Image 1 (cartoon, rainbow, N blue to C red):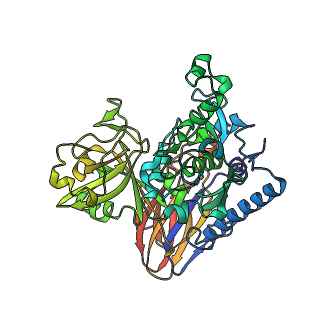
Image 2: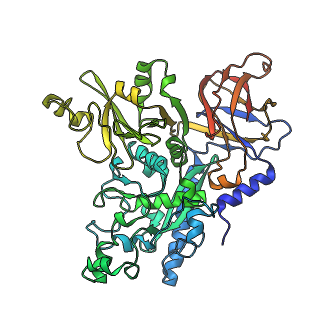
Image 3: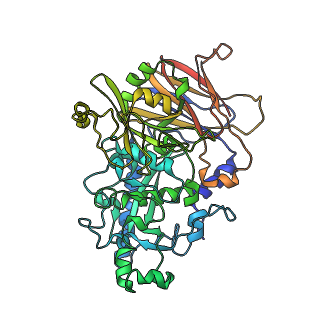
Length: 516
């Protein structure tokens, strides 16, 4: 069994000592950084997301797919990914580290995409996209990755974001006939290409494995059974497209598989935060916000939600309190996506989506509610909503604030931003503890986002032991470290992998003191 890249990277980092990553993103301009004392700093990565390194990752992805496709065609073989082999290494692909867990998945079979969707009523099948991508085309399977689905749903609301950042979707980055696909993800301050084949787990068993009574339902015709019961997205064990004749026909389950490979196995995707999923898909920076902590609700509407899907993306959830499972039709502890915020006729509306495709809001302004008078029905196109049991719904802003507990906000960047990062020597130790620090200087005034993050331990959660990481940092002008800090971050909970601070900095040299 080949060692997975995630485990290999973990072992290398452990050999160096567990560390934390400090990142500074700023508008493109002049910046220089000095190394921390008593710590050997790796070569600096500058402009990682928005300059040549992103393009280099895409080119590596293209080259690998092209090479694999060429070699497979020369041998008259379809691609089989030996590093993540769902056929011959099923258990490790499902739950490689959790050998005795109770929540184990039991797929009935493994089929290629072309076998699942061949001869379906889909134009030019099988297809990656059909007529673009939309929020309503995702259905969650038996995997607890609603947070990742919500992240996918959210990024589809920003025009062309998937095509530009999340995954290279040109024909050069996939070969459907050979069965090879290439994706890119952002993890631990770097872009990583992930190559997979087109095998997917299914929940419908082979003809030979069903009972005689079940065979009678298909008039004892194996061909009829295979051409109906074992075709289409509904047969997939995990995620599928919501409407097989529309979008995401094969993209959705394949990007889920690619992310599972990056994380080590499918079970590693169970549980998470939508904003961190957006980070991994875009290279953005996420922030958790308790709605009860919002000081000025009007300012949050105008400065934040009204910019949804421009340079920031939002998800939301309701905290589980042990009472009813649902709140006006909405699931507690489940990730929903904010599609758009609009003002129409003096009212503020938020459009949202449930990646499950159901469990919608049933309060005011829900589909078919009494608030939808003929006058308001005529304004549905302006709001951008259609009635239907598709997981999409509308809430008035006042109800939005009363209902949701937590908002996950992810800031995404274009090429006017650059990035620099370094690893800090931050050994695990009990509080109180000394600060670690790094220096950064700016030669002109700039908006900046400083991020303190730890290694993403999702691929090896069962190996991470009992460490608990709570992180925060202070920013000082160099030479004034004994004075009060200019800026201080929040103190993040141990379940979050990063904390950040958005600030405007004047020219000068600064010291960032971090604690973890």
